[in-house]
Amino acid sequence: MKSKKDSGIQFKNWVPIKMILIPGILGIVFLVLGIRHWPFLIAAGLFAAFAGYFAISYYLFSPAGGKIQEKVQGIVLKKIELKAPQQILDIGCGNAPLTIELAKRFPAAQLTGLDLWGKNWDYSMRMCQENAQQAGVSRQVTFRQGSATELPFEDDSLDLVVSNLVFHEVGKTKDKRQPLCEAMRVLKPGGEFVLQDLFLLRPYFGSPEELKESLQNLGVRKVEFICTCDSDFIPGWVKLPFMLGTLAVLRGVK
Image (cartoon, rainbow, N blue to C red; front, side, top):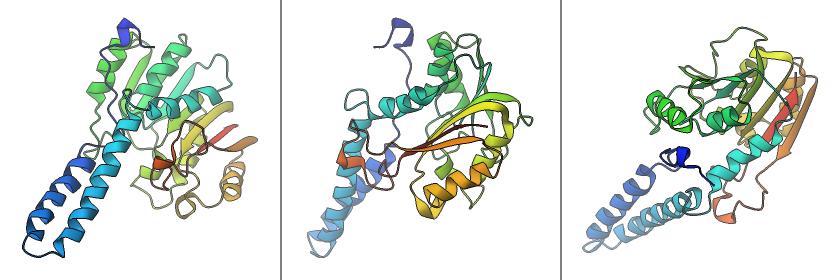
């Protein structure tokens, strides 16, 4: 339940409105064209189906619907075992929902939320700062612009590194495992990482065994691969591979 302090925070939906509007408009265009040439009706139906799929997904992800975004984020929070980390990094913080929840959970910690805030998303550093201010955690949190492939931190400098649905989106490298190397670089020996992404997408990350081995080769002494796509709150509707059907967590200790 949100407190009065949190009531003005807007974290945005993971499904961009354009994913609904663009196919919806194209569906109408092809429907009009189909009045004279019936083959266009096939395209109209396909675009309408796309628009409908993303519209339902938007609703399910929202607080008014299934609260799937909040629940997926909650998986990361539940997997954290450290009791009192001092320096925390949230890679790809978006509009900072996870960063803010971590600040509330660890009031003595200092947190950094890092993101590129590119044109493809309705997120910005200013929104993050406003959300942190609204949540009353702005003194704990710093936001920085940067890439997951080149984290602006010293080696072995952080106690806890988290991330939620980010690495598959990183465009600066074809090897989606490279940001994992960066995350391990900045983590202190004995530090903890909890990273959730579409890690079951083999073209991006390889097999779970290969992924665990690649982290162990970086000196990680403990790593778990936890399939989270089968969580009870995730409906079959959004279990397609490009949505949440390949969701998993990498958790461990360096």
